[in-house]
Length: 476
Ligand SMILES: C[S@@+](CC[C@H](N)C(=O)[O-])C[C@H]1O[C@@H](n2cnc3c(N)ncnc32)[C@H](O)[C@@H]1O
Image 1 (tube, rainbow, N blue to C red):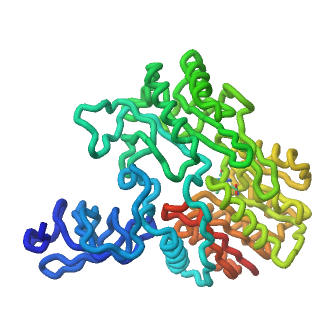
Image 2 (cartoon, rainbow, N blue to C red):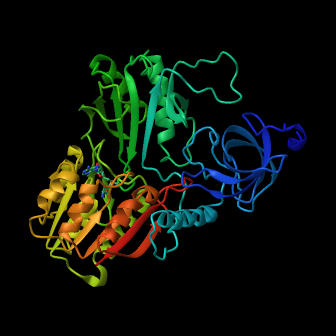
Image 3 (tube, helix red, strand yellow):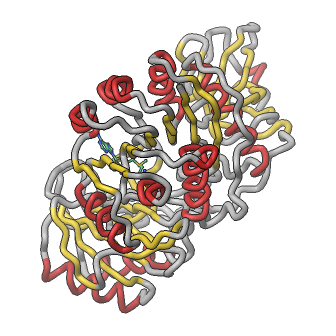
């Protein structure tokens, strides 16, 4: 269609088409570009289905002032870094929205995103090149699938097809519907077969999927984790009630079909919140955890403890943190590891420090960290269970740490943590950020409190997605 001749004099609205020149990405990984309407008015467009350098016809989804959200409905010219996407769900599943961008260009986009995030928070530092993943496919060691009573119907499916049971991933922006995942090019290889068998066996057994609208149904989530060193696989089935007479035979049948599963745990989540964490767990087969080796450490990983989802790159990340924390071969007397998860970074630093204290809120992660210290014969670490915003100020009166590692969740740290760090005044802070646009404010607050940002080292833990991990070193 000729967009210019069919677009009316009024400002663009839903369904209208414009031509858009794509020139970059925003911080959420949407492609962005510029379009001009027939009256010569310019708009900033945010869209899916295009890469920088593309010229596309874009269908307007919504407009706010001079900003338009849209969908690419056809290419007029292709950017130099556009590549074929590999996955059949690309475009529907929002999981890896950069899959159609050449990997080298993804790393360049990640570098630009880090630079932008620093500027957003008024921070200045030179940013190292992003360390890419040498094998950027099937890297995810953990997948969290959701059961739903409403299935997303994909383009091309016949009319009247069954849509009352799904096991897969949420379609972006549709928290009520789940797309059956038939393939995933970033998940570990066995995940595809396990999720397919789990879906078939659950349907055969007549087990009801969770219904988000009326909070009925049994099956809520299936989390799969694989340890790459031991090849062990953990299946964590989250249900709304215990229902052992239904769940136990299902678990047995799934394990019989998929002998690669080495442990099966049921988590029981009776609350309405759609989280893949049980209020209590039942171990149905195996030890209830998997074991992994990372950076020379022997680690156990339980269903709900944090572990980086890309094992190969997590090893590299751990090495960077170690290098930055122990710069010049220093041996700090005391190291604090804030948000220590299963203890990986604490344990890694323990051999070069007098004492390490980890702070972590999730009890199963603290239990893993303590068990991991024992497994590795490390006795100069301790772990404080609780909210670091409360626990760190309580430690501010004791012997101060020389080095703090800070590895908060995506949203960043509570202001009380920043204040407590100001009092503890470690000479060096190694800040690990998985979303610098969100947690850059914490880094800026530390700079305002007297540290200087010495180095930024980005690393790609999440190929084909807009996310990038960063190690930032602050010194005083
Ligand atoms: C990005 S992970 C880092 C884990 C660990 N450093 C690692 O490398 O495996 C963030 C961790 O912070 C923990 N966490 C989240 N909020 C917290 C809080 N308020 N206090 C303490 N820990 C918290 C999470 O449970 C998670 O284990």
